[in-house]
Length: 449
Image (cartoon, rainbow, N blue to C red; front, top):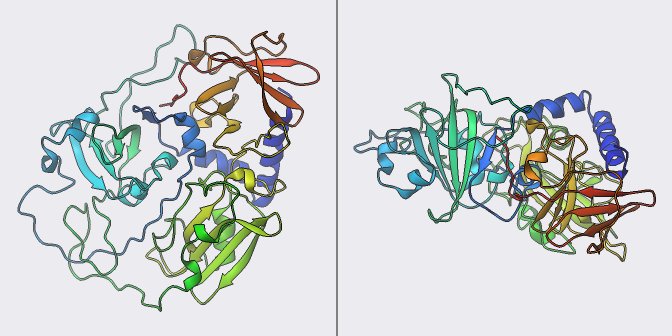
């Protein structure tokens, strides 16, 4: 493969490697931690694309240590008996007998506070409520994905004693909540309830010590400039559904001794909040316990803002506590991104929102990273020279074809490539030297397990 996007990907990997030692290896290791996932409820956006690019990606919440609790007098979460007859159990294909733990989350984005050993699942990083079922045995849903080669079957799965399949419903209405199923999740440290500063620990906390509460750092109120981060942005379009406001909480990342060091690590190869600019930040506010950094572009217009603090329950160091940003198409084009997303332009040369069109490598943890995924509105197409996405297309990628008579110019451009589309059919990427056929996915909500 030799096209503009491959060059973009190579430059991104080279830049990331230069940013921090062993960046590529660290990135590969981070991708490997993503839990296998199936989405059972259509959402209008490709599920695996959401794993890479879902906007709404901040797992922010303060987690103070627990105080004393009272002995329960009735089943309480995570005891499945507390949800006997709840229709949400059925949506997850579970029952009181087949579930090991069941509990609710005020916000789905708190999932790593309830399940701290769970891999990163950015599609859960939304404000909607969550409902979690930990299965005693394997989940009942079939596993997506073609066998490794024709004639082979997938080997039967088994789970280690400390690992379980997990179902997470996202949404307040049991009938329409999005169903996300994860294979082989480490449930070490599971806690049913996240407590807030100044409140006693409620029942249902697994392994939480009872007795005297530990001290919470007391400082003055947060400065006024940490409020309304979204209002401090100067976006051309809507503010991206990315991150959260202060004081929604702290990112459960490893703390660092200075705000600058914490920001550098946060934007490093392990950053799951795709896509943010890696460079181009300047400090705009600071005091003894707070710092604010902004990425500006176009007459110094702020396009992303990150707030850090050393006043959290994650130790004495600095961590990110607030993050808001515009669409990646509004960032400085010279700044590399935390994930290699190609920004397309319209016929007038204007950069187009990634909500409208974007292209990116497929998820590596499913073995699909040799393909480029192209999302145009609700449609998904693949540049798939190795055929790894063949199970989800009716046609095949072709490197040199004639342009069909019913193809129309979309007006979208990426470098010297022009995108032509056949209604209900495939995409055609036209360059001065050839025309490639990118087959359309028969399942735009494709996920992987």
